[in-house]
Amino acid sequence: MIGWLLHWVYKWVNPPCIGKLPPGSMGFPVIGETFQLFKGSPLIDIPRYYQDRLKRYGPVFKSNLVGQPLVVSLDPKFNRYIFQQEGKLFRSWYPETANSIFGKKSNTTYNSTIHKFVRNFSSKLFGPENLKEVLIQELEDAMRQSFASWATKPSIEVKDSVADMVFDLVAKKLISIEPIESRELRKNFEDFFQGMLCFPIYFPGTSFYKCKKGRRNVHKRLAGLLQDRLKKIPKKHDDLVDLLVEELQSEKPAIDETFAIDVLAALLFASFSTISATLTIGLKLLTDNPIVVDALKEEHEEILKERGDKNSRFTWEEYKSLAFTTQVINEINRMSNIAPGIFRKTLTDVQVNGYTIPAGWLVMISPMAVHLNPKLFEDPLKFDPWRWMTHDQTKRNLQQRNFMPFGGGLRLCLGAEFSKLFMSLFLHVLVTKYRWIKIKGDGVLRVAEIIVPQGYHIQLIPITE
Image (cartoon, rainbow, N blue to C red; front, side, top):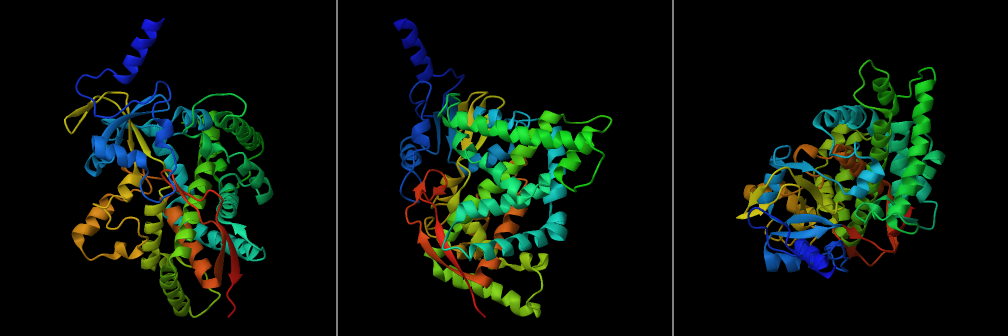
């Protein structure tokens, strides 16, 4: 028994490889270096895990995450190569916990035909044309109503408040339910982030147990809704469920009901989780940098002057003209880094810097480590939207090539344009109609993204004309 155990530990520490593995450590058996990888730091700088290994091993090193052999890439050149070789040397990967939560077919490991199918469906609702013609006005209405409501309260917690607003809107577009129903549904998504990279231990009290319980409730609600639509006389709701039902009832459907439910769950989750977290950090950064707020106000007040009619709507042309606002959003995304990592799995042995990454291994790109790299972004810990207007073409190209808030390669985030429009409109309403006071939210924690452990609380005060 002891001999077997020693052999098992040896194999763990020295995994098989035809060639030379990148330097690094596999950590403890079973758990690997999971806890070190996701240990928070009270600073906004790159956590010690990355800094220590970068100094010791270089920009590409081996590790182990939740029992999966892993190579972490902090190398910008190799990162671009990974994106370029997607479908050839690499494929997308999500943790087993994500498969269990969303379903294996709904995440980005499904085949390219299904992926194109989902992209087509999503683009009908969140593509540029629908954003321009329909959603921009619906977003503005939702924001004005939400801001007015928030302004009547002593304070709001930004992340929860924004999450409620965006989830209400997206739930109505995807599945046509009203806010009262959507709030209850959103509660079942709350534990999802906590379980995305946890150990898949199904036992009461564990994060994975809470995730699975939430998933059951979500799927029960979505399955009931889908069945109602399939059984009843067709009634157009102009939502994603309509599109899915139409496909399910076609002569040769490309999907089944389980897949349809998984896709709805995944899109609902993605719609609110990242935007609300990003805007929370964005508001904190703006509060700490009033000079940026002044520049934002100047740009948006200029738009109001050019309108003539103060009651006219925010337009697509105005959105596209917001040069400084775009720079602010880029800088918020660069510093917040909501995605803990971009994961790929090797389809064959991959060579990098004289080392071999075996087939079947994971590769993790860290957007945070790239975005805070002083060789790529000068003075990276400084919140500086003006860095994005540099006239130095070499510096501009370097920044743009290594900026990845929405992923990269073939799997660029479907909601990238929706997210940018949402943030632009949010800032427009905020700086033209309100001022705000921070009530609570000083401490931060950097894991990959920046977290405000106690929440970020503000008081909104309407600007009187």
